[in-house]
Image 1 (cartoon, rainbow, N blue to C red):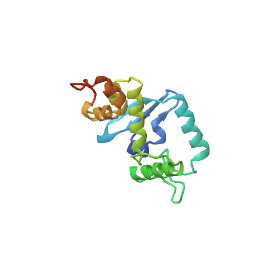
Image 2: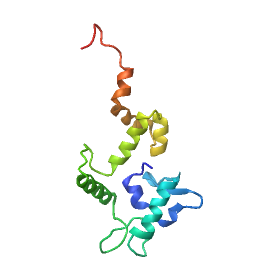
Image 3: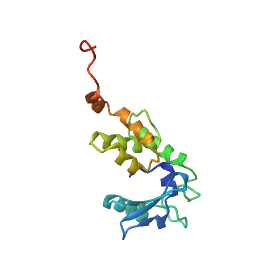
Image 4: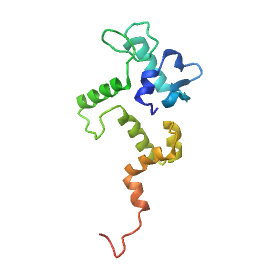
Amino acid sequence: MGLRAGEIVALNLEDIDGEAGKMTIRGKGGRYAQLPLLADIGKAVASYLHGGRPPCNCRSIFVRHVAPIRGFGSSAMISTIVSRALTAAQVTSARKGAHVFRHALASDLLRHGVSLEEIGELLRHRSPNTTAIYAKVDTVALRELAMPWPGGVQ
């Protein structure tokens, strides 16, 4: 879904509307967005809420599993969880925090021919310049655009 760590921390139970198949995201700058709740994500969240989430009165969807049971205090905790999971899975990556998933999603979409404009819309970027950062990583596509070196291959 391309959520930022802060957006994950801010998710509350009332933000999920399973019947309508939508979820409300509180993004950067206090902006709200309604996103489709994909069936597999809805099932995963429901499974977590019914079997993986510790009992508590907290309205946050994702909560700590150690006392005190409450929502995460900051996005840094999400990045720490991701970093530990990547280390445990022996995944080597230049990026270690939660943003690695957002970056991987954008890069994968770009490799599959999705336009930068569409990626920017999905990631809820305000500026096309922010999304353009992901064009740098698609070296295969950039090679196709490169002009031949004068005088032959160098």
